[in-house]
Image (cartoon, rainbow over all chains, first blue to last red; front, side, top):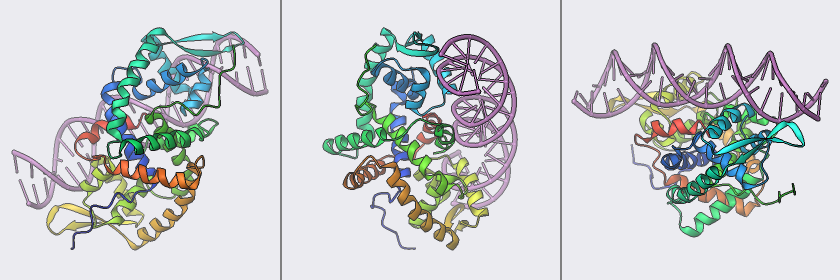
Length: 162
Length: 162
DNA sequence: TATTGTTATACTCTATAACTATA
DNA sequence: TATAGTTATAGAGTATAACAATA
Protein backbone atom coordinates (compact mmCIF):
# COMPACT_ATOMS: atom_id res chain seq x y z
CA UNK A 1 0.00 0.00 0.00
CA UNK A 2 1.56 3.26 -1.14
CA UNK A 3 2.34 5.85 1.49
CA UNK A 4 -0.24 8.62 1.20
CA UNK A 5 0.58 12.28 1.63
CA UNK A 6 1.04 13.02 5.31
CA UNK A 7 2.18 16.61 5.06
CA UNK A 8 -1.24 18.02 4.21
CA UNK A 9 -2.83 19.95 7.04
CA UNK A 10 -5.69 18.16 8.72
CA UNK A 11 -8.65 18.27 6.37
CA UNK A 12 -10.87 18.59 9.37
CA UNK A 13 -14.15 20.35 9.67
CA UNK A 14 -14.65 23.38 11.85
CA UNK A 15 -15.87 21.30 14.79
CA UNK A 16 -12.80 19.11 14.93
CA UNK A 17 -10.43 22.05 14.54
CA UNK A 18 -12.16 23.85 17.40
CA UNK A 19 -12.14 20.71 19.54
CA UNK A 20 -8.46 20.01 19.00
CA UNK A 21 -7.41 23.60 19.59
CA UNK A 22 -9.54 23.91 22.70
CA UNK A 23 -8.10 20.69 24.03
CA UNK A 24 -4.62 21.95 23.45
CA UNK A 25 -5.40 25.24 25.14
CA UNK A 26 -6.94 23.54 28.16
CA UNK A 27 -3.93 21.31 28.47
CA UNK A 28 -1.56 24.25 28.34
CA UNK A 29 -3.59 26.28 30.84
CA UNK A 30 -3.94 23.40 33.23
CA UNK A 31 -0.90 24.25 35.33
CA UNK A 32 -1.91 27.90 35.59
CA UNK A 33 -5.55 27.29 36.51
CA UNK A 34 -5.07 24.24 38.71
CA UNK A 35 -4.95 26.38 41.84
CA UNK A 36 -8.25 28.08 41.06
CA UNK A 37 -11.50 26.53 42.31
CA UNK A 38 -13.40 25.33 39.26
CA UNK A 39 -10.35 25.52 37.01
CA UNK A 40 -11.05 27.08 33.60
CA UNK A 41 -14.66 27.81 34.42
CA UNK A 42 -13.76 29.40 37.72
CA UNK A 43 -11.53 31.70 35.71
CA UNK A 44 -14.32 32.53 33.29
CA UNK A 45 -16.59 33.39 36.18
CA UNK A 46 -14.00 35.75 37.62
CA UNK A 47 -13.31 37.35 34.27
CA UNK A 48 -16.95 37.95 33.40
CA UNK A 49 -17.95 39.12 36.86
CA UNK A 50 -15.04 41.54 37.06
CA UNK A 51 -15.64 42.97 33.62
CA UNK A 52 -18.73 45.04 34.28
CA UNK A 53 -21.48 45.83 36.70
CA UNK A 54 -21.76 42.77 38.97
CA UNK A 55 -24.09 40.37 37.14
CA UNK A 56 -26.81 38.28 38.68
CA UNK A 57 -26.12 34.59 38.84
CA UNK A 58 -28.61 33.88 36.12
CA UNK A 59 -27.12 36.46 33.77
CA UNK A 60 -23.65 35.10 34.46
CA UNK A 61 -24.76 31.55 33.76
CA UNK A 62 -26.21 32.66 30.42
CA UNK A 63 -23.05 34.52 29.44
CA UNK A 64 -20.91 31.49 30.18
CA UNK A 65 -23.35 29.04 28.63
CA UNK A 66 -23.59 26.90 31.74
CA UNK A 67 -26.54 25.82 33.81
CA UNK A 68 -27.52 27.89 36.85
CA UNK A 69 -27.35 24.81 39.07
CA UNK A 70 -23.73 24.28 38.07
CA UNK A 71 -22.94 27.92 38.72
CA UNK A 72 -24.17 27.55 42.29
CA UNK A 73 -21.47 25.01 43.06
CA UNK A 74 -18.83 27.05 41.25
CA UNK A 75 -19.71 30.18 43.22
CA UNK A 76 -19.73 28.22 46.48
CA UNK A 77 -16.12 27.24 45.90
CA UNK A 78 -15.01 30.67 44.70
CA UNK A 79 -16.73 32.36 47.63
CA UNK A 80 -15.14 29.99 50.12
CA UNK A 81 -11.77 30.85 48.59
CA UNK A 82 -12.53 34.52 49.18
CA UNK A 83 -12.45 35.45 45.50
CA UNK A 84 -16.09 36.48 45.04
CA UNK A 85 -19.03 37.49 47.19
CA UNK A 86 -22.77 37.15 46.68
CA UNK A 87 -24.48 40.47 47.38
CA UNK A 88 -28.23 40.87 47.52
CA UNK A 89 -29.61 42.96 44.68
CA UNK A 90 -31.34 45.96 46.31
CA UNK A 91 -33.84 46.15 43.43
CA UNK A 92 -34.80 42.45 43.47
CA UNK A 93 -34.25 40.55 46.64
CA UNK A 94 -34.56 37.22 44.88
CA UNK A 95 -31.44 37.92 42.84
CA UNK A 96 -27.83 37.92 43.97
CA UNK A 97 -25.06 39.80 42.27
CA UNK A 98 -21.62 38.27 41.93
CA UNK A 99 -19.01 40.71 43.17
CA UNK A 100 -15.30 40.03 42.75
CA UNK A 101 -13.34 40.75 45.91
CA UNK A 102 -9.98 42.53 46.05
CA UNK A 103 -8.27 39.19 46.39
CA UNK A 104 -10.27 37.95 43.43
CA UNK A 105 -9.24 40.91 41.31
CA UNK A 106 -5.58 40.42 42.18
CA UNK A 107 -5.82 36.72 41.37
CA UNK A 108 -7.59 37.44 38.11
CA UNK A 109 -4.96 39.91 36.95
CA UNK A 110 -2.14 37.56 37.79
CA UNK A 111 -3.79 34.67 35.99
CA UNK A 112 -4.55 36.83 32.95
CA UNK A 113 -0.86 37.56 32.65
CA UNK A 114 0.13 33.92 32.94
CA UNK A 115 -2.50 32.86 30.43
CA UNK A 116 -0.94 35.15 27.84
CA UNK A 117 2.01 32.82 27.58
CA UNK A 118 -0.32 29.84 27.47
CA UNK A 119 -2.12 31.25 24.47
CA UNK A 120 1.14 31.65 22.65
CA UNK A 121 1.82 27.96 23.18
CA UNK A 122 -1.59 26.95 21.88
CA UNK A 123 -1.16 29.16 18.80
CA UNK A 124 2.48 28.37 18.13
CA UNK A 125 1.67 27.19 14.62
CA UNK A 126 0.86 30.75 13.59
CA UNK A 127 3.01 33.84 13.29
CA UNK A 128 2.20 36.83 15.54
CA UNK A 129 0.07 38.65 12.98
CA UNK A 130 -1.96 35.53 12.27
CA UNK A 131 -2.39 34.90 15.99
CA UNK A 132 -3.86 38.36 16.42
CA UNK A 133 -6.18 37.85 13.47
CA UNK A 134 -7.38 34.54 14.86
CA UNK A 135 -7.96 36.04 18.30
CA UNK A 136 -9.99 38.88 16.85
CA UNK A 137 -12.10 36.70 14.58
CA UNK A 138 -12.73 34.17 17.34
CA UNK A 139 -13.93 36.84 19.72
CA UNK A 140 -16.15 38.37 17.09
CA UNK A 141 -17.63 35.01 16.16
CA UNK A 142 -18.07 33.94 19.79
CA UNK A 143 -19.60 37.29 20.67
CA UNK A 144 -22.33 36.79 18.10
CA UNK A 145 -23.58 33.55 19.62
CA UNK A 146 -26.69 33.51 21.73
CA UNK A 147 -25.14 31.74 24.67
CA UNK A 148 -28.30 31.99 26.66
CA UNK A 149 -31.91 30.92 26.37
CA UNK A 150 -33.13 27.44 27.11
CA UNK A 151 -30.71 25.95 24.62
CA UNK A 152 -28.07 25.52 27.31
CA UNK A 153 -29.45 22.35 28.79
CA UNK A 154 -29.47 20.67 25.42
CA UNK A 155 -26.07 21.85 24.31
CA UNK A 156 -24.22 21.10 27.49
CA UNK A 157 -25.01 17.45 27.07
CA UNK A 158 -23.14 17.53 23.80
CA UNK A 159 -20.22 19.64 24.90
CA UNK A 160 -19.04 17.05 27.36
CA UNK A 161 -18.57 14.61 24.51
CA UNK A 162 -16.22 16.48 22.25
CA UNK B 1 -25.98 52.24 39.27
CA UNK B 2 -25.17 53.57 35.80
CA UNK B 3 -25.67 51.25 32.87
CA UNK B 4 -22.22 50.15 31.64
CA UNK B 5 -21.35 49.74 28.00
CA UNK B 6 -22.92 46.55 26.71
CA UNK B 7 -22.04 46.87 23.06
CA UNK B 8 -18.36 46.01 23.47
CA UNK B 9 -17.45 42.59 22.13
CA UNK B 10 -16.81 40.02 24.81
CA UNK B 11 -13.39 40.77 26.31
CA UNK B 12 -12.90 37.08 26.73
CA UNK B 13 -9.73 35.14 26.61
CA UNK B 14 -8.94 32.58 23.93
CA UNK B 15 -10.25 29.71 26.01
CA UNK B 16 -13.67 31.22 26.54
CA UNK B 17 -13.99 32.29 22.90
CA UNK B 18 -13.15 28.75 21.78
CA UNK B 19 -15.57 27.25 24.30
CA UNK B 20 -18.46 29.47 23.30
CA UNK B 21 -17.92 28.99 19.60
CA UNK B 22 -17.55 25.24 19.94
CA UNK B 23 -20.70 25.09 22.01
CA UNK B 24 -22.55 27.03 19.34
CA UNK B 25 -21.23 24.79 16.61
CA UNK B 26 -22.19 21.63 18.48
CA UNK B 27 -25.64 22.98 19.04
CA UNK B 28 -26.05 23.82 15.38
CA UNK B 29 -24.72 20.44 14.25
CA UNK B 30 -26.86 18.51 16.68
CA UNK B 31 -29.76 17.94 14.31
CA UNK B 32 -27.45 16.80 11.52
CA UNK B 33 -25.36 14.41 13.62
CA UNK B 34 -28.11 13.05 15.85
CA UNK B 35 -28.65 10.07 13.56
CA UNK B 36 -24.99 9.07 13.65
CA UNK B 37 -23.76 6.69 16.38
CA UNK B 38 -21.47 8.69 18.63
CA UNK B 39 -22.71 12.04 17.33
CA UNK B 40 -19.91 14.56 16.64
CA UNK B 41 -17.19 12.08 17.56
CA UNK B 42 -18.66 9.41 15.39
CA UNK B 43 -18.40 11.88 12.55
CA UNK B 44 -14.79 12.69 13.37
CA UNK B 45 -13.98 8.98 13.33
CA UNK B 46 -15.54 8.59 9.90
CA UNK B 47 -13.83 11.68 8.53
CA UNK B 48 -10.38 10.74 9.76
CA UNK B 49 -10.64 7.07 8.82
CA UNK B 50 -11.86 7.92 5.32
CA UNK B 51 -9.19 10.52 4.72
CA UNK B 52 -6.20 8.28 4.24
CA UNK B 53 -4.81 4.81 4.53
CA UNK B 54 -7.02 3.07 7.12
CA UNK B 55 -5.48 3.93 10.50
CA UNK B 56 -5.05 1.59 13.42
CA UNK B 57 -7.34 2.20 16.36
CA UNK B 58 -4.49 3.60 18.42
CA UNK B 59 -3.42 6.03 15.71
CA UNK B 60 -7.00 7.13 15.24
CA UNK B 61 -7.45 7.70 18.96
CA UNK B 62 -4.33 9.85 19.00
CA UNK B 63 -5.46 11.91 16.03
CA UNK B 64 -8.81 12.60 17.64
CA UNK B 65 -7.33 13.16 21.08
CA UNK B 66 -9.55 10.57 22.73
CA UNK B 67 -8.74 7.54 24.83
CA UNK B 68 -8.38 4.17 23.12
CA UNK B 69 -10.93 2.66 25.53
CA UNK B 70 -13.49 5.24 24.44
CA UNK B 71 -12.75 4.56 20.79
CA UNK B 72 -13.57 0.89 21.29
CA UNK B 73 -17.16 1.74 22.22
CA UNK B 74 -17.43 4.28 19.41
CA UNK B 75 -16.24 1.75 16.83
CA UNK B 76 -18.57 -0.91 18.22
CA UNK B 77 -21.54 1.35 17.48
CA UNK B 78 -20.28 2.49 14.08
CA UNK B 79 -19.53 -1.08 13.05
CA UNK B 80 -22.95 -2.27 14.15
CA UNK B 81 -24.45 0.49 12.01
CA UNK B 82 -22.47 -0.83 9.05
CA UNK B 83 -20.44 2.35 8.59
CA UNK B 84 -16.97 0.98 9.40
CA UNK B 85 -15.22 -2.36 9.63
CA UNK B 86 -12.29 -3.55 11.69
CA UNK B 87 -9.78 -5.33 9.47
CA UNK B 88 -6.78 -7.19 10.82
CA UNK B 89 -3.49 -5.53 9.92
CA UNK B 90 -1.50 -8.12 7.90
CA UNK B 91 1.77 -6.70 9.18
CA UNK B 92 0.83 -6.68 12.88
CA UNK B 93 -1.88 -9.02 14.00
CA UNK B 94 -2.35 -7.18 17.26
CA UNK B 95 -3.54 -4.10 15.42
CA UNK B 96 -6.82 -3.49 13.63
CA UNK B 97 -7.32 -0.98 10.89
CA UNK B 98 -10.51 1.05 10.70
CA UNK B 99 -11.96 0.82 7.21
CA UNK B 100 -14.92 2.93 6.15
CA UNK B 101 -17.54 0.93 4.27
CA UNK B 102 -19.35 2.10 1.17
CA UNK B 103 -22.35 2.98 3.28
CA UNK B 104 -20.04 4.86 5.63
CA UNK B 105 -18.53 6.83 2.76
CA UNK B 106 -21.95 7.76 1.43
CA UNK B 107 -23.08 8.83 4.89
CA UNK B 108 -19.92 10.83 5.42
CA UNK B 109 -20.29 12.74 2.16
CA UNK B 110 -23.89 13.55 2.85
CA UNK B 111 -23.13 14.76 6.37
CA UNK B 112 -20.19 16.83 5.12
CA UNK B 113 -22.55 18.68 2.84
CA UNK B 114 -25.08 19.32 5.56
CA UNK B 115 -22.40 20.48 7.97
CA UNK B 116 -21.39 23.20 5.53
CA UNK B 117 -24.59 25.05 6.28
CA UNK B 118 -24.10 24.45 9.97
CA UNK B 119 -20.73 26.12 9.89
CA UNK B 120 -22.22 29.15 8.25
CA UNK B 121 -24.66 29.44 11.14
CA UNK B 122 -21.91 29.18 13.72
CA UNK B 123 -19.85 31.82 11.93
CA UNK B 124 -22.69 34.15 11.04
CA UNK B 125 -20.99 37.04 12.85
CA UNK B 126 -18.30 37.16 10.16
CA UNK B 127 -18.43 38.01 6.50
CA UNK B 128 -17.47 35.30 3.97
CA UNK B 129 -13.85 36.38 3.60
CA UNK B 130 -13.40 36.47 7.37
CA UNK B 131 -15.02 33.06 7.71
CA UNK B 132 -12.54 31.60 5.28
CA UNK B 133 -9.64 33.23 7.11
CA UNK B 134 -10.84 31.86 10.42
CA UNK B 135 -11.27 28.36 8.99
CA UNK B 136 -7.79 28.40 7.55
CA UNK B 137 -6.11 29.71 10.69
CA UNK B 138 -8.02 27.30 12.91
CA UNK B 139 -6.99 24.33 10.82
CA UNK B 140 -3.38 25.49 10.76
CA UNK B 141 -3.35 26.03 14.52
CA UNK B 142 -5.14 22.75 15.25
CA UNK B 143 -2.83 20.87 12.89
CA UNK B 144 0.19 21.97 14.86
CA UNK B 145 -1.01 20.46 18.13
CA UNK B 146 0.39 17.19 19.35
CA UNK B 147 -2.93 15.51 19.90
CA UNK B 148 -1.28 12.30 20.83
CA UNK B 149 1.16 11.03 23.46
CA UNK B 150 0.17 10.25 26.98
CA UNK B 151 -1.21 13.71 27.46
CA UNK B 152 -4.66 12.58 26.36
CA UNK B 153 -5.68 11.01 29.61
CA UNK B 154 -4.86 14.17 31.50
CA UNK B 155 -6.46 16.56 29.07
CA UNK B 156 -9.67 14.69 28.56
CA UNK B 157 -10.48 15.13 32.20
CA UNK B 158 -10.42 18.87 31.66
CA UNK B 159 -12.22 18.97 28.34
CA UNK B 160 -15.43 17.68 29.82
CA UNK B 161 -15.56 20.70 32.09
CA UNK B 162 -15.48 23.55 29.66
C1' DT C 1 8.79 -7.59 28.33
C1' DA C 2 6.11 -4.21 25.54
C1' DT C 3 2.06 -3.15 22.72
C1' DT C 4 -2.85 -3.40 20.69
C1' DG C 5 -7.29 -3.89 21.77
C1' DT C 6 -11.11 -5.21 25.07
C1' DT C 7 -13.68 -5.25 29.30
C1' DA C 8 -15.17 -3.96 34.16
C1' DT C 9 -15.26 -0.84 38.14
C1' DA C 10 -15.28 3.59 40.33
C1' DC C 11 -15.55 8.34 39.88
C1' DT C 12 -16.92 12.88 38.02
C1' DC C 13 -19.97 15.79 35.86
C1' DT C 14 -24.36 16.93 34.35
C1' DA C 15 -29.57 16.90 33.74
C1' DT C 16 -33.74 16.82 35.98
C1' DA C 17 -36.80 17.81 39.33
C1' DA C 18 -38.11 19.37 43.66
C1' DC C 19 -37.88 23.13 47.21
C1' DT C 20 -37.55 28.12 49.39
C1' DA C 21 -37.85 32.97 48.89
C1' DT C 22 -39.29 36.75 46.62
C1' DA C 23 -41.84 39.25 42.78
C1' DT D 1 -48.42 32.58 38.98
C1' DA D 2 -43.62 33.32 37.63
C1' DT D 3 -38.72 33.94 38.68
C1' DA D 4 -33.82 33.58 41.28
C1' DG D 5 -31.36 30.59 43.66
C1' DT D 6 -30.47 26.14 46.16
C1' DT D 7 -30.35 21.24 46.93
C1' DA D 8 -30.87 16.11 46.00
C1' DT D 9 -31.24 12.18 42.97
C1' DA D 10 -30.40 9.68 38.83
C1' DG D 11 -28.01 9.16 34.64
C1' DA D 12 -24.26 9.69 31.15
C1' DG D 13 -19.38 9.93 30.34
C1' DT D 14 -14.74 9.19 31.66
C1' DA D 15 -10.40 7.44 33.93
C1' DT D 16 -8.22 3.65 35.77
C1' DA D 17 -6.88 -0.83 36.07
C1' DA D 18 -7.05 -5.43 34.77
C1' DC D 19 -7.16 -8.86 31.00
C1' DA D 20 -6.15 -11.52 26.32
C1' DA D 21 -3.56 -11.80 22.15
C1' DT D 22 0.50 -10.75 19.68
C1' DA D 23 5.10 -8.67 18.92
